[in-house]
Picture 1 (spheres, rainbow, N blue to C red):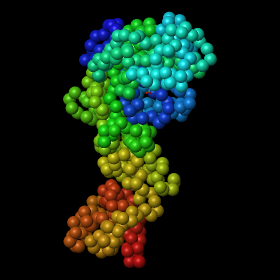
Picture 2: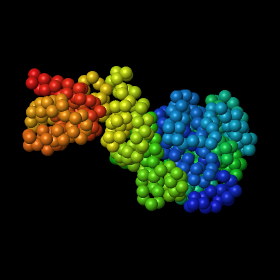
Picture 3: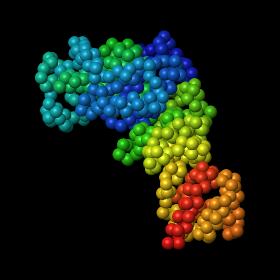
Length: 484
Ligand code: GLU
């Protein structure tokens, strides 16, 4: 079947309507946690709209009353705000637009493009079991049934011909009409199917480009048949973005993989890092650089450059990106971003000391990969006693070379040396030398005794911020424990 389309022109490699502004929509169904794949779809829509100076509509597809929940919708809106993906219209809710869907089904029936069907599932299955082609057999097609109790409305699919989907990412897949059954558009309980609502809304909202997950590709032929039957004129250009897979090349799943955007947010990923990483799932900036700012991304984004093969969601790479984005923050930004994570530290609320944190923050910033790692790095400053990591204690103090002598010497010399990181460094290096140990080894028992861990921000700066008295008290207690 020949399809009329928008008169398109190519702008920056992408087909856009010659005489209309680009309009895209992000149309999530609020039936569960907001998935990183959904966030990637939202981002691609947003990048495309911003690149072409168009508009993005947010449409909540909440027609499935049994599976939708208010909180899932709130989660989507929050997540988009967190990622700083603003929309120009909406959120529209499909649940408030049912009148439009009813009108559309009435029109299709009146025009003879749809018919009522009273086949029960059992009857249908009984009849079609032996058929070579699966699906509905058209039993009620010409029975002239009127609306009534227990009757569903089916779309009358053309028997012949084919529909070509124009897809910027996937070329032009062709779907033979003979393979498409007369599908239900209005259930026998009177509710329209999801696909119909999507078509009606895309028409009503003047959507020029449908950018969505590849799982929707097989349904696009039905979309286009409905579009035609409803007299929608030029249908949108499609772009089905590739599925996200894990390391084993399995489709990301809620049960198996970490897919909730919320979880990454709670674990201290920065929205900028997340956004940058998501953009690379199926797309790559032309110059091969991976860490790209938002404005650059908007300028460089091309729908036509999106790949059709599955995209590997690599958590390790995301973590690496995050660390890089954390290091790129200004000191003040890092302190600000850490705030919410510090609220849940293990110390008594009144014991947190902003000045102490600020003093050490730039050194912590260099060493964390997520903001959730920040509290553990600084808790020794705010707890009356360090929480001792017993494994580190065993390895670095109980079995560490000359650990007891080093602790004793440090206790002695720290009591009177100048209290600066430089002086502490010098004194500790000298203690190490006397025991034929390099600085790295000599530091360990001191670090574990004072901070409780064998990793953390640079030791001497940490001691300087903590202060002489708490430091020597901790060294003393560690020695007592060793002797006990
Ligand atoms: N509501 C659908 C989903 O969440 C998207 C449908 C579409 O974009 O056409 O998967």
